[in-house]
Image (cartoon, rainbow, N blue to C red; front, side):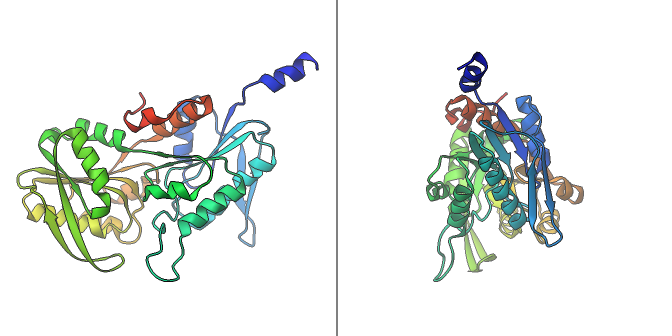
Length: 329
């Protein structure tokens, strides 16, 4: 074996980052953070609406990361991600990691009624079948979704970035109350409250049917205090807007909402504008530029450095547990 062939065998694979169509701004920020250029890829729709993907550079033996968030045209973007994974896999990529900041179909994680699908499990199976070797995501709606995969899943946490924002942007945060808008978010809310060493409150909601809240009961005291609602996701924003009104009527001086994934579909922006929020703070797992043009209350926390550092650590074979308690500088 000559020296050139030996060098190729011992050469460490390079990081290749490709962006899907859903959130190219976030992909660019991740690449910039790592000092890399985004890989060349062309995605297009054929006349019959089939998705076509062309990877424009060699990925043979390389460590490939494909960034695609579960937002916008979710079904098209999911199909695009699956095709990109498969294209890289059959082009002999060394490892293919899907970076999915907002995991699609995450709310369909269990059978709520007879004959209902568990679509999150189906998405997990599709990603594995397409050829993904690793998944990076953030604040899954239900952490047990990790168990749907037979491949490694890193469920990163926005909490360190949220804590940093609270300390920097809310001057009287030491006298605030962290509020969970429903029982499902108690663990997240109590974790933030414990790390800030502040009080915790819970809103118990009674539903008429899915997506429609009948009434709310506040458990805890927010009188003369700043109330901070925390949740993993807000879609139509009915729950958090009702919760904000409940907190203000209970005597809260100001109300903030801090969310990981701001889906903001349907009447969400109108509801936020009408509600008594001081600010609705979301991460950029989902693009927010258009929503911010129509709602001055929406503010964004950049989490690209967390995803970039996770990629760097995984590529280097290091633990990502540091990111559960620290924001990369």
